Image (cartoon, rainbow, N blue to C red; front, side, top):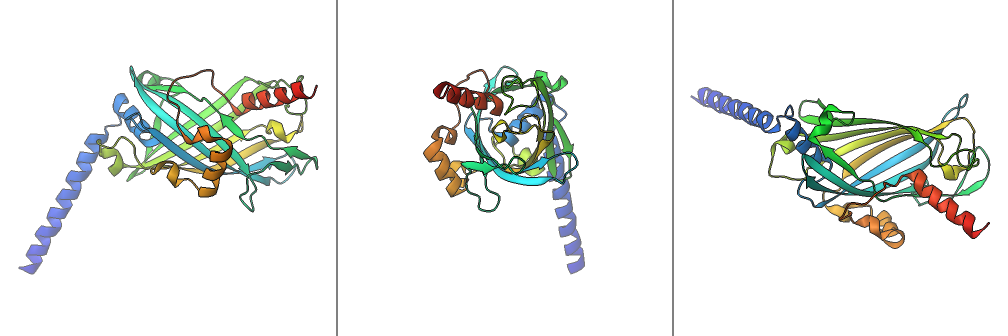
Length: 292
């Protein structure tokens, strides 16, 4: 009798597991473009319109032809987003701050010694505000289509953003800070979320872990001029489900003291978008006006 009882208990558990899996697959239905968009926004943000925060820890490496690559510095990024419902999708309101850090101590850098030029240069941190984009069902047939891989218990959303546009820092005008009249880079994102979390449609924001990789030109403040080479970024990221309280205390204190607006998400749409290069241009042009 005990064996029979255990058999029926086991069969009941198996049937329940199958039913739960079937219910999850039905709830996910990522073949529906609207549900796919909703799943993606719940993963990277919050469909309720509340603020969401993402933190990334990055190692930045320099690659010069004919040389072994070098680890140069760290980068800690805090992104603050708000997704507002619009016709056919969501409007992302976003700002982000990135602080370059010493790889050994984690201290925020004020100056950095360039190993190729032996010069000490002023570090100009990332302060991009705003960085606003719409995410809509209509985009699912274009280059900003949401793509994902089914990894069993997990869904991995991924984006490969290949950039090429006229540089805000033409080499003829900024010879110390720019090597080209075109800005060329690649931004590679992964966002991982569990299927069980996605299947809970009452949750507007879900735990997410991710990666961020980037290939791009020397940073303007490195003052590399037209020296051959590029930077590689290797980062890990997570959504801060507890909000700013989950941010590393020392980093939170630094941002609160020097750049407090980045501890909150935008409330309204603004344009044009800011990039590291356009922000640097503002800084360097202002310095030139102060010291002609």
